[in-house]
Amino acid sequence: MKSMVKTAVVVPNWNGKNSLGNCLDSLIGQSVDTEIIVVENGSTDGSLEYVKEKYPQVSLVINKMNLGFAGGVNSGIKKAKANGAEFIALFNNDAVADRYWLENMVNEISKNNSLGIVTCKLTSSDGKLIDSTGDLYTVWGLPFPRGRDEKTSDKYDLKTEIFAASGGASLYRTSLFDDIGYFDKDFFAYYEDVDISFRAQLAGWKVNYVPSSLAYHDHGTTSQTIKGFTTYQSMKNLPWLYWKNVPTKFLFRVGIRFFMAYSLFFISAIARGQFWPALKGMLVSLFYSPKKLVQRFHIQSSKRVASDYIWKIMTHDLPPNAQKLRNLRMRLWKLKRKNTN
Image (tube, rainbow, N blue to C red; front, side, top):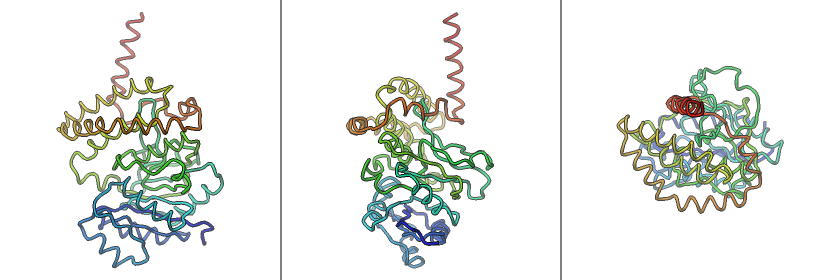
């Protein structure tokens, strides 16, 4: 089947040579024609030479240094836009796409002009566990991938609107980037996909989850090779996600919960022997906070939906794996009941 619209798939790569072949083979084998763009993010493992030799049909964007996921995909998106792509998919270099992955998302986004982003069902590489069925953002200021580490079942087989899309395997309407801008390169990696989805929601765009679109992912293949990477990026990016996007009406209400959780994360990082990555992330986050507040002004002043709508589509609970926070919340509830009796 030939695609009725022009699409591109952007694959950011940093030292991912070992998994890149399976990824590209699955994209070349898609049921619709698409341009494949590999963003070579300063790899030192021979990835660039490998793609040039084995996949001459693949377009390349070559960055001299690692710009992270956010900066990397931005350069790929710009190339895809220049080449006339109407829809641009992002795909992790350690993922493999089902043959109809792209076609099913294109069919969905083409039905509704208010749809800015469509995301898929992402499972573990063996298909046994859920990696993501879209991302959610809680009233505690904490995002999480829906269904992460649950056994694969029919639980998430219904098409639905979702708060955010996983940047690792989702499709974006090109005009969305003209409207709200690109991924925030300061995030580098982690939560930049929730940030752009949050900005899209504030601007009136919708995000849909399409379970018939399938992909398989080895979660954390890159980040696990760098000690303290996840801790540093989380401590840096989570406050930015909150400051930029939470509507003013709910800033204090979310903030009092968020900074309680953020403090607990810092303590937990120290207990894991990651004091420096956590402290560094916190300090960098603070250093850039004036810039993020300026961005907040532009985002909030141009939002096209009511604050109450955003509150409605947020998740009014903690992430499923936040057991320490659940215990803390329970103690606070008991203390409050004791003081009111």
